[in-house]
Image (cartoon, rainbow, N blue to C red):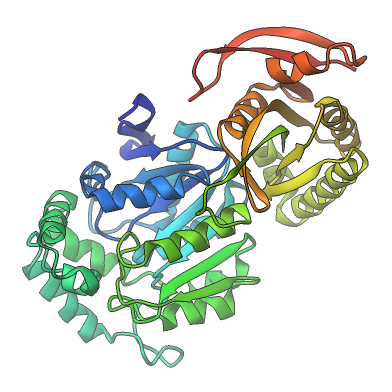
Length: 445
């Protein structure tokens, strides 16, 4: 385990919230577990680690123990408002040094993810809701949901078998004949929390009803659910899909609730396609490209000052100007994540550098500034998506750029010497997750 993947703690209102990361990349994918959570024990099962490693092909995966579970501090008292857990997520993002993340919520964490997305849209890139519970108790809208009595009986029965791994029959019936999984699950239960802690958390989560917030979600949302899920009825996802504007629902075959068991290829394929625009499976082609990353400086501050509506309008104007310059200079837009653009060029890097310069000027007229980073190197190309170390280097170079600055790596700079473009040397730098020290150059003009 590398130093970047060790357990860390963020401080939230005096409480310590445990998290760790897996992989690296241009976006952060924060996984919010259900009740079961211990960010060390969960990776002791090889299949679980493979699941997260595959997801890390889209970006850095962040595992977090919610307050009251695993390595995070216990809950003080019987109540834990969702607003408190919203600040816990913000504390983790702040500790990571990231403005925005994709939230990937499982079962009961859907309420927290939805609340965060509505209250902190400027810090939410997208929502992934898998096996989500959105109706706490049966009512007229959801006659298929558990009654309060059924729910209490289920909680009590689970508490009696807590720590044995017998819950595998409900969480993943397709893997019920695998004793090593049952042993791992029992250990995960015991170290996640006590049986009483499980009962208290279950009752707390079962009182959270965020249906009223669903129509106010304004970020890209993907709902995933296995049709015969034995833990959470698929009709939860179907109901949510009708309430969330623009949400996409994908029903997958299978009865296993745990996302890292069952047909994980189909599940991760849908997630990677949602995040990257293309599935990641077959061996990618390698091609020499110039990669450009741009993002708006202090996007969080702008959103806070302007409010959601005016910020969306400003962001739309920003996107239009960036796309106009990409078209003018022959760049290919690979994808956008929030206010960030990833684009590539074939051939010499000079058009990419001139485009970055033009984007800087164009968005300045809107009263905002961008930072940009470029690198020329071999990329992995799969369909419309790109990846590999060259993309990571470009992202790291962009992260080091100051406001209204275009930074180029030594390879991009060295290829355009004599083109008429002027640069100022910015010295050698360590790029997070990249071996060696890299010379960087600021584009002038």
